[in-house]
Image (cartoon, rainbow, N blue to C red):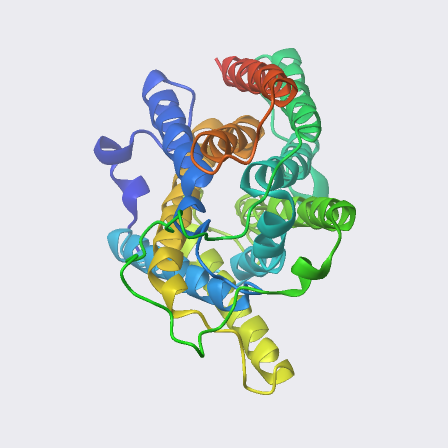
Length: 361
């Protein structure tokens, strides 16, 4: 089947380091970081309970994005191994709601981003898990950039957050009509994390963010593995596409299938009485569409820049954007000391991202 990679006039050359590829790659990075850093904003103040129903809605939206992309790409060959990456990501994603409830949107994203960076960058740079090691024009800049991005996430950890309950009488969630009153039998947003002490919340949230980051950073490995084994005439992946976006539908199908399995198990565990929040449907779907678009752009960035360049940028800069949302809109960060730490971390993020970008030139 033909794909967009067959039309260089539309997306540029399939490989190489010419200026057109760099423009596509860095524009894809820019769109990706903005959407990744903002995709949880619509649901930040929405009742989500334990997050299982929310994740299923989110993943349904993600799969919808991939379906549209698959139609545009004229249905490239479906590789089941790519679904494994989606399953890995979905496993990490079930921790997102508890993370946001325990340590906040900004800090949670920054911690899982640091380990996402470490796993994704290192596996690509050093050739782990059977994939080829990737090279850049200026490896020293790449090492320094990745190191600064990781250091920035460590600095962000020292920012103290003030995570509030979803709504108050003065505060209306985004995308929810404030004139609609909840019925007496409405569900509450209480979940197991609300029973933890502040210290335990920070510990549990941080550990879950670390696990999520490692799983997120591993989700691209199956696709990279397929791409690195296309030249073996006797191999199962001979002739597979080198255009990363051709694997989006398979990976996102893995995400939706795995999330459906988890949600089904959860419903059985709850004796068919899951926490279902109707108000979370539209915000959750919007959040999923934003995430899906961001990941499609990440696939393109991997193709035009290589994963060793895109990972440090896309895994850390969204944390900066999410933290800005947390500071300006949700008031999660307060106090001069915290602001000074944020400024330092922001400088490290920007410097690391720029060094990583220049390592490709």
